[in-house]
Length: 505
Ligand SMILES: Nc1ncnc2c1ncn2[C@@H]1O[C@H](COP(=O)(O)OP(=O)(O)O)[C@@H](O)[C@H]1O
Ligand SMILES: N[C@@H](CC(=O)OP(=O)(O)O)C(=O)O
Image 1: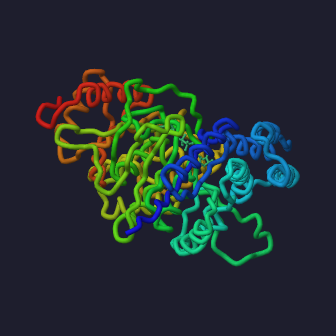
Image 2: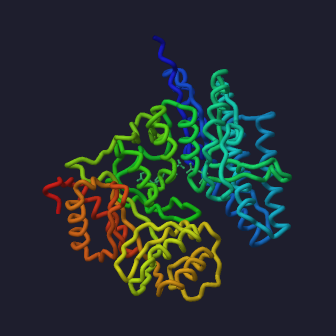
Image 3: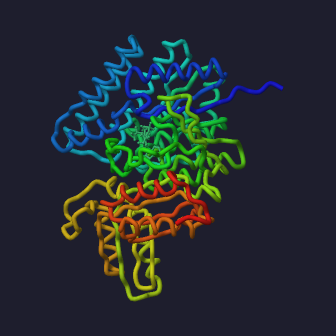
């Protein structure tokens, strides 16, 4: 019987499309996959290089200083068009979008208003611009390609601007709209990271664009591949896959990439499970969006085999990391598959053992939609660490006088504190880091004893310790200024001289 050609989502992140040279390489790579391996690709593209940060900064300037400056973003795109010899309608479409983006910023400056909805609209231009450049480049290389906005292929989201979630109704819409395009032999080039909320076509509908949170193109790729029943979702990065440890990933809304590698000996992990990848992403590894695993995991079980392959577009020969339902790298002898860390605030509440205390604490977190990362409780007190990035996403305010240095002042935190103070004596402290090990929890005693011995050797106080309910992570909370040392020592112990289950210490 004839084997149908493999259908694959190929997602290219900001670093893979950061300039003309990389975009040309992406186009060659896609063409090679089609010609040499008969792959039918659907591309998902992120904004070029640092464009998303540039657009966020431009929006902030428009509101804070009343000035409109799109020059860096404009120059990058215009130079790229020139370098790739893209002209005519293809080029004028890009320039028109840049003009539109500038007019949106003028509106912000003029009105002195920047709602989360408008911020999403401004940021969405990044992906819409890069997709057009990539599709035009493919066409110049003789590949039939069509740029499509995420909403053209059915991506429907909640209306939580800045951190929207795709709705289930997207699944049907994607299958119905993506496959016909591919069947006619066209490569769809879809905007990652963005969508449109459900709802009627209201006046002002054009402005209703949502974003899926920083790094959200990974989620778009996973969603498209899972919903359309593809054979594989490939997320092309600037690293050889998920590494055993990497940069200090905690960099807030702007996602700086300046930090050097924490562990020069960090190496790619050959395979991890969906759960392990999700935990790793949630606990700080910037390499994947924390929710990106969900669609692939969901489709992977009853309907279709979907897996993710993180590959490196700078080095296409590297194997990457295979993420699948049952592909853990942890074993009896390999106790840990990766280590990550992120900074956060710690909140300690004390109450005299009242019934319902924890329920009231959790209700307050629910009300303010703040996630708890690590929790330790006794009868009279509870210690929790809070997700700093999540607090930062809600714009900071300056009205909170009584927070200690190092704790970000955000509206959500002020509200949460006020609610918690009704039920407990609350103390908040900044300057903490969660160090997370994706580990074989079946050997948790060995892992925990090795972790504690390592911290003891360095004299690093372990402020909290927790074994995640997901059964794949073990986390410790340490002072922020010692987190790098802690990760380095743990990496040395678990990867540079692997222990075994019996002999770990
Ligand atoms: N455990 C990890 N493995 C690999 N990369 C990591 C890890 N933790 C953080 N990173 C960082 O993630 C970056 C890749 O993610 P990202 O910048 O979002 O890529 P892209 O923009 O191409 O999607 C790497 O350059 C690396 O610095
Ligand atoms: N451009 C968006 C979405 C994204 O996923 O980007 P990247 O693939 O470069 O991480 C961001 O910077 O957040």
